[in-house]
Amino acid sequence: MMSTTSDLRPPDDSDAARAAEPTAPGGSAPQQPPAAGGVPTAGLDIASFRALAHSRLERFPRIEVPDAPGMRRAAVVLCVVPADAGELSVLVIKRAYRGRNAGQWGLPGGRMEGGETAEQAALRELHEELALPADPGDILGVLDDFPATSGFAITPVVVTMPDTAGLRPDPGEVHSVHYVPLTRLGAEDVPHWLRREDAPDGPDLLQMRLGPAMTIHAPTGAMLWQFREVVLLGSAPAEARVAHFAQPDWTRR
Image 1 (cartoon, rainbow, N blue to C red):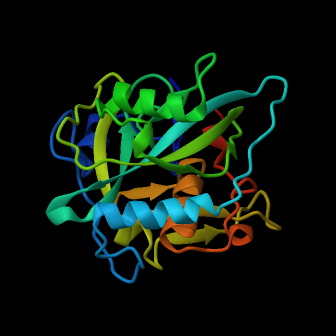
Image 2: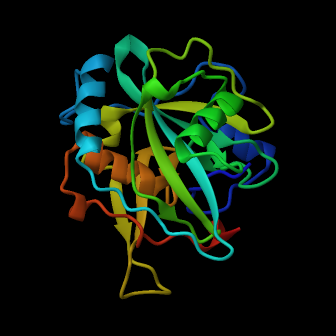
């Protein structure tokens, strides 16, 4: 199954590098980056967040990437859940240190199978990778397709769940699971834009700096950024498009 990808460098697969990461292997408790305030969704319970997010996504005119020769489709899940003390967070995963996108940051998701919609694929992948049984009623909406340089058009599906009591990462696909508080995702110091030496006239490279050891780039970083802008901050659609975002070269694998 494919994943979205995101580190500035290809991950170091050495034991020392893995030991240095503040991650939660296997089924242990997911980790949290530090929280920050100032986000309009701060303090909302899951029901209030669902209402706000559904309203904003319903008004968002999403852009779908049209079919093209050689293009493949995938879907990922932006899954919002209550974490410690009820703080709403989105689930981010680190891929298993094997196979495609080994050790990279991503969202639960994968390739769409024949006859599936993006929503169906997203829910199936969430269950296969994390054993979380979301159903169609948990879906709040869909963001823009992201045209990845790997040849996939990736559709982000926004979902909420009341808890993660059944969370069991598949060790063949997921190294660790992380709760990213929505307050942190919406903080002003998270998005950073880097000028690219190979393309000084743009577009710049986005870094989502979510924690000391969690810097995420497109495609995953682009989808987290659009979720932040559209759902958390209520930005105008024209100011929240991501299809033009640059990706590090190694994400083309």
